[in-house]
Length: 320
Image (cartoon, rainbow, N blue to C red; front, side, top):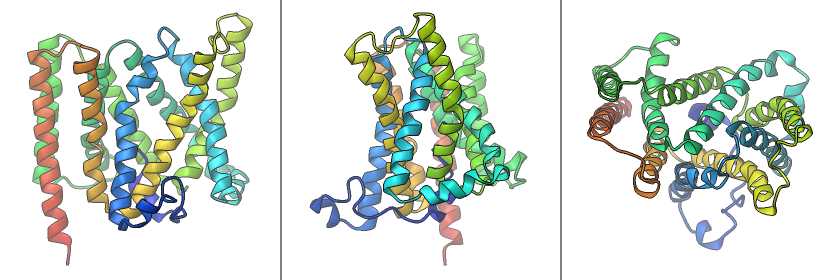
């Protein structure tokens, strides 16, 4: 979810953090532990629609507000446990370093809010399409902004993905705006976070804290209008608080995975989340999956297969 290269520059978390304190895990190699963390992170991201669905008719904006507030509190606690609060204080005294995070926090909130909206309005299939497209959007951003050069495999993958989106437009009669906005917003978020010299966990904490005052003001406004769902019953209250947990915990798992796995290995795990989301949309929530969807997804999957294969060959050629 965050910049992988930036994560690898961040000091490793204590080996006994989160799941590392279990004796069975201590007997694993770093690759085994990294793979387990990656499965936990991407698996939870893939199954998270099950959680958002429990909110029922609660507006996505209200859920997003609670997600920001509770995430900021839990991330501050995580920094305290990992003794990284001095790094946070050092960042906050330098506006030139944290001001760019205002932009990334706005992009992140847009991405989070649209995803919750997509799940609550029964568009899980389209949200999964967005995260399948995201790696190819990253390639395009690298070419357009970082002036990177496309390999033949990357060019072919982008072309296939473009054909998939065009098929969706022509067959379904509408632009998959939700999928494209999710893919592009998350692509820009990853690009900007790569360019901002801030460690992932500290950066995410600052991002959620910067938007928390806005979220608190909005939630307070809802309360004055008697439109707030918080406190209506114990179940909803726990769901709101839990939104911070299901946001923060997978990111910590992802952070641990990135410390232990090669980028190429971790890259394959990213397809687990949208695959699970697609399965939930079709098999659990019975969203329509037409022949047009099948053609579009087939083209996207072919693009990802071509992109992954050429990346593997490129890495092997570059290895001594």
